[in-house]
Length: 226
Image (cartoon, helix red, strand yellow):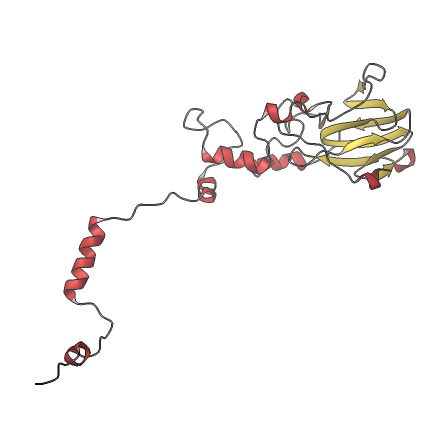
């Protein structure tokens, strides 16, 4: 009895090409089960969104889009009053040392270990005593110190290291707030709108922030504060 041949011997080696019947069957299957289109990535949604420098002007009549949520997450400014309203940002005796406001500047007297915190851009000048900021010592001979404290970052506190320390905070002339016109990422991160002269706001608690942003104080190593 003759030995049976193997399929490879009978039909030859496969050349890797499909037959016309197999190609037609695959084409029929692909038409029967079309692939579902996946949603575009969030980066594409943001990139395709036209920026008009106005946060609330959208064609959907006020409904929040992925674009809105993405910008809020980048800025860290999503509204959450419960999370931040009780956060203490300044600690000083306001009844005995009420801030003296004049020509946009604020003069405050604070005692040892008391502190004040601001959001925005401002010039700091220690008129009397000793204070620390970002772990650095500031005294009357230090002159004006320009401070940048956007809401997207932890806010630095000005802490008195002696009793009867007098500090003055004043507005600055800066082009930083004009970045709002270049990208929505820089929107609503300072103390006021670009067309106003006040460049900072003194906050006792996070609830004092008019925009109700999530604000946190900067934590400096205690060894640097002494």
